[in-house]
Length: 430
Image 1 (cartoon, helix red, strand yellow):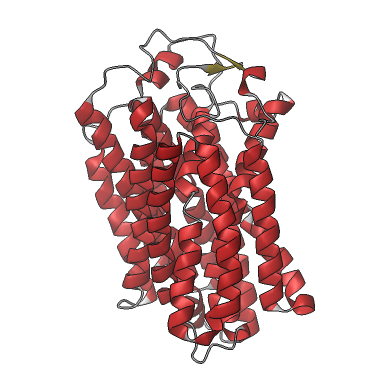
Image 2 (cartoon, one colour; image 1 turned 90 degrees about the horizontal axis):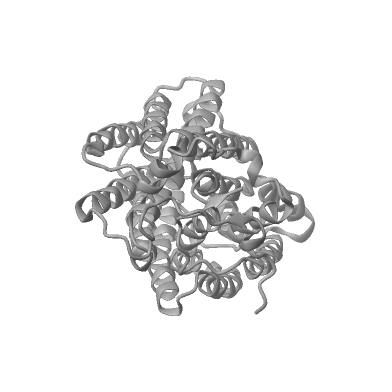
């Protein structure tokens, strides 16, 4: 397939004086400690991100909201605030990661969202919930991009994909853990657990090394670091970033519609018993873990990020159709087919890795940190379209056709990207 966007049009390779990323000797202990910290950081990150999806109804009921329609609309409003916080935080932490370092960004992000989630346990009014979901989203925005960027730059090319897959696989287990915790603890205790886990994680920061590529780039006084406007110009670079975001959009159609509004979809499918949000998250993210490992390994086998992502996007179309045709048979069928849909979204780690590989060292953290949060933010317009279509088409048809449309857009977008599997990351953007 002919590639539409060539990075060579906008990227100038300037060796920093370090050995090639593909062949450099590296500090095994430091690199794998960074992988461990990034993986555990993403574990806590996902634990906290999905908590609201699970605790939406019990937490709002505890604040006095009982009307089903209001629970649905206010739940979407709070989700939008969290995603908007992620969008703002992605830009802010990405810029800081390129200016001041991947490590400072990683730990600053963990500290902010840990404190926000601790405070979430003590809210007594909806406006407090609104402020803290935005703050938590802002903090959660920085962890994944900073961690993936650090790991990608510390490990040689041949191991880069496996390391980032490991980070995602461990991290996604955090969502499964959140689903389990919500079945045994009160909603405010779950927020306390998430905040405490994040603060404990900060103790692991000792011994983690900063990226050598970043340090070498920072030493060059003539290089512009972390300028987010560089993502917008020249047009081909902006198009590259847009294709990354649109390529990941199907994942957050599933996360923003099918996972969060699973109880409403279950009702529309006429499931015999009410659908439990905690069980949906537990089953769905168990599938996501399997899918992320499978997609990472497929990428290594094919030696291609693009073909692995496209393969999973095609699988996602099939799984959405299968789910909506068969999931209403029983609650057991609903949960297991939701796990299948989750597995088909398993290209998250590969597309986030691709986001970092598509851009030079002086812009890499900005791109790799903001791209996942722009992808997450696509859930805002996508859910609004779903809300708009549902009364006309019905919940089931709206979910099916919107899901297929998101996947088709994603396939076209990824097809337009340049392959980055074997790319040496020692280059700059100008």
